[in-house]
Length: 86
Image (spheres, rainbow, N blue to C red):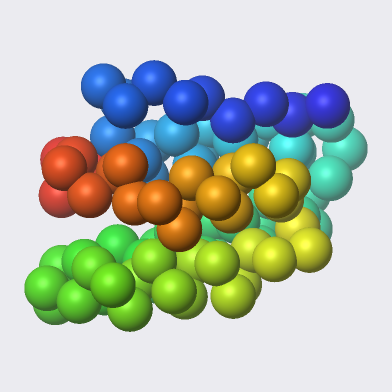
């Protein structure tokens, strides 16, 4: 099963894309593409200074596609400090 890197030292978008790569490697290309698209949209919100909306979008877009623990991390927002570093 694909795992999500929880290292806060790694920029959040990089962790999400690595998670998508792991999903694809285990034969789940549609889910991987969905995760990548959600991350791209999240980055657009962040670039516009709308981090809260970006987080909300990720939770909505990824519910049912990724484990609940990943959604909880998104909701908690530990990636806020490094969201722009991606």
